[in-house]
Image (cartoon, rainbow, N blue to C red; front, side):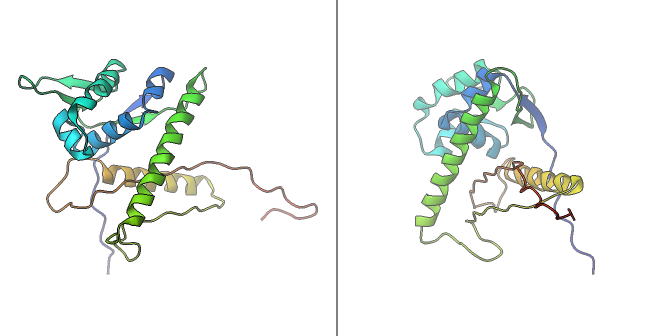
Length: 204
């Protein structure tokens, strides 16, 4: 019996973020939350909808929306009087991606963003673990953390990247009926120095 194919996930348009000043803006937890929430709402929404998702007053978010627009990471859209509506990038379906450039200042800015990302992951994990209704096992578990270390060839790296891309795409896009589990996903894939071969031992 043929295995069912997973549902097709649309490929988002990628907006690379490489300018150190723009990257540094994303080191703010509030701005990371805004971008992530906009992505979960389909890539565009008004400030009131984002504030409601985050459980924060809208007045406290306007400054962050303006800064993100100044950097070109968000675009302010035409909206009824009194409303402020924003989109990620300047084209529908755009998602932001950090570009790890090696020009001056970029490395430090990216490290700051990733540091905040990992802090948020720890915060989310602690909060979920404290809730008595959080599912921690089974095929529909909601909480999972771990670290794997191993060797990959080029094909393995491509497969790992494809799986991570799919996971991200699965979490982005407008909410659909029946989707009542709000989750966060954080990950770091990094090359590490392999253990040197012992003298006289041949590689496999």
